[in-house]
Length: 418
Image (spheres, rainbow, N blue to C red):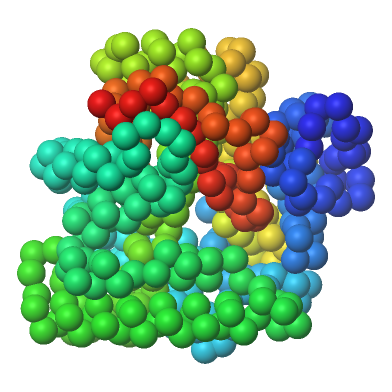
């Protein structure tokens, strides 16, 4: 949605606002600005036809993310939501979708406890030298000078390599992971012509997860995957919980970081003065990463939440089982919380953005993601002098994902590979 286009009326009484299409994906912020001005809760419609309630504004988003009335389990969804949600078909939905993002306490609490140790800041710090080796090796493989596609050559590969090291995915299995499997988080309806390819991805990913479980059972170690398999074998996890948690690690543990690297790079390429400043002052990286997360978060919208009964949500009556979505991007550009929110201020402080969510569903891998972004951006800026877009900005292809932001390709050029 470009700023020159007429913006639709918003608010609970208006017709649902469509959150779809190339203009909207290219720049959703003018629409979010109008929504914030009109109120905190809005009726929206997604490409699947799902009608939902979108929460905008920092205070409303923060409250919704901590609202105990809003549950994440899909069982809470009503028939209207279920009819159009294009959720994963059975039996895969029951086998792969009982991970942390779709659970409520106390089940969520029990499952989350099993993964947090692998992503602590101390554990991430121990792995930083290895992560740097991985980033340098990918840059070493780039052409001596541009052009290059930084998604295919770097952003799509680095997060998975880091994830494999962190969770204990053996190199032989890591080499066989098909990034195309990540598309299973974008389900298609039964009549969609892409349905056969979608179901093939599901079966391929399920077979791969079974291989991972068998390998870690036969060759256990101190890694996270081995601990999850051991927890299942000790009756602490059901088979479905085990497979779902591995599914979440493999898919949600990498694609958002891939997209965040691209959105961060695009923001810097659009602000060459700030790019040069960050390249010349690497000590600025930690604050810059926080600002880039706030400025254009790859996790644009949260996954579904549901009220168990009809209730008030920031002054709007929301029916039980209707989907409630929080716009993290809209919250992170709220002028009532951030001064000059549409400006990229690399040393902004304080910076209480919501890019990783908040509350009990705060991203457990946040420390790892922050480290990946620092290493990725620091390495690319230092080793690719003269980095700039190789195509016009308007030619960038923004992915049509419902919840996320990123580009399918990032063609760049540079003077030489340092």
